Length: 262
Image (tube, rainbow, N blue to C red; front, top):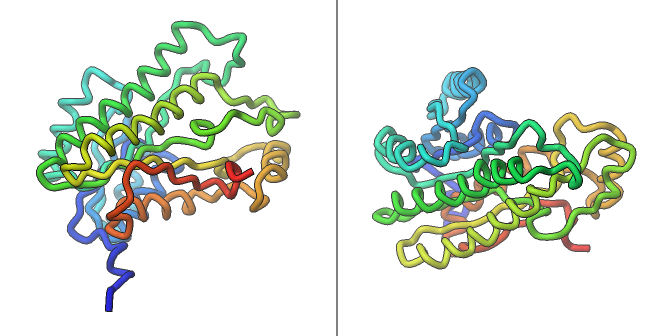
């Protein structure tokens, strides 16, 4: 009888999570480590990253921190090679970093060319190159690359959910996340022969300190009637990282409570 639970085990696997000290990244790190992987938190935030690594290592999990700026495009190739040497290989690479400029929340009318270029470079270009470098690192052994996209990389924004709040959906976010989704398809096609799987996970809204007005607006729009919890996104990443998804590549996994279904 097939052991289906074992298919979700990551025992013996080596995983890297960029942005691993963040709200979603930290849950992904925890999920992968609990499944048995040796996980490296690759994040520019040293204090938060070291704290998380210490907490999880103290719980008996294989987790370490490595300071890594996933938005520094010029340093990504050398940085990834250094991570590969440190771990002795990479089986799972998760791009969960969320780099952005200080004016990220500006409305369309206030978006400057300089800001646009910087955000695309920090986020889309960095994800693209990291995915390429990770795939090349994995060619000899196979592996799984998971890129964080978004519902707004697949469908247009519903601006009504921001009514009565000071929030908006940045213009660059749509271009960046849409690019990440199709980038993942491209790399899945190119590196499939090497048994390197590349998938995009697209969360909807995730609880994280938003205003009551936004939560109410958003929840009315979702068939499940609520925002996601961070662990619900992490569980989906675990599926894509594990052998339970061994025949899944080039897909866009929507984890959105049904947002994109209607």
